[in-house]
Image (tube, rainbow, N blue to C red; front, side, top):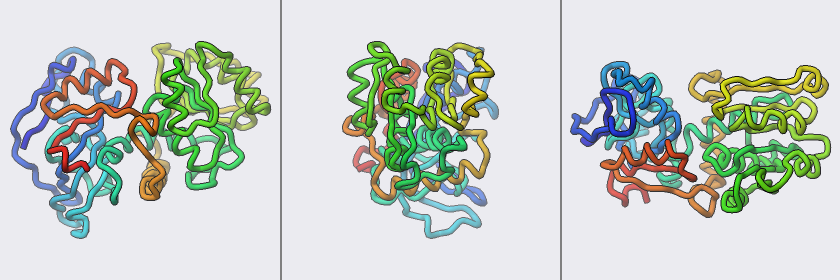
Length: 345
């Protein structure tokens, strides 16, 4: 089989396409023929490592956490009924060498989820972005701990950075749950993407006063904020939080540290919650996987330009270019086609 491998950390040039034997699933594992591999920021950050050229743990690594494909073989103790199932994969490469940037991968059975008739493109886009968004939306006391139709009726959610992958996922999940969604963006083009994802209100922070606009829509403040740039947005977030609101921070903006005023945030009992999907509590992760799978199964999750998430395709041989695109902040979702295109129809 063909697989993308790196044996030292560094820039995208360390990625090589090599021939490897098809792996055998061990006890509790499944072998998946991968159709599409999704690329996330944490994938290139792991590949870059410290930039020292040091080898990854184990000496080699197939990158990428997310993907979708078909289960071919199951290991001991795994339900044989999974064979032939179309599935999406989450956290394939977390503390393991077998990521999804390969024609085949092996993962623990709990990390494959039935995809049903949904496209492999959607499946490869679900893992890290949607699980992260789920946690951001459910971490606060004013929010439900599960997401389904109607679960957030009456709540107001602010998504800072509504044109990003996690922002897009948060908009889709919150709208499915009937929340009122306000999204911030940096351009008219990104405003169109956030609106396509389902945002009720879109604010261009370069042209409009975010606090004024949010307070106009939600005079009593918002219930949850999905935050991509905590350093730049701390003042805004502080001024728009409502009672018992939660600001869920899932990314950094290079600020390095965050300073918050104590007394103004004590009044509304506001919470700042930091979110890293890989290390979040297992109970929260299990709920996220279940709810995201349910949403996908109901057909309410979408990808592509009509869903506010343009797709950028790369063949396996151009995995380095795919990583570079994500590292350069490509707008939309970068996907690597690991098999023939008709497999992902």
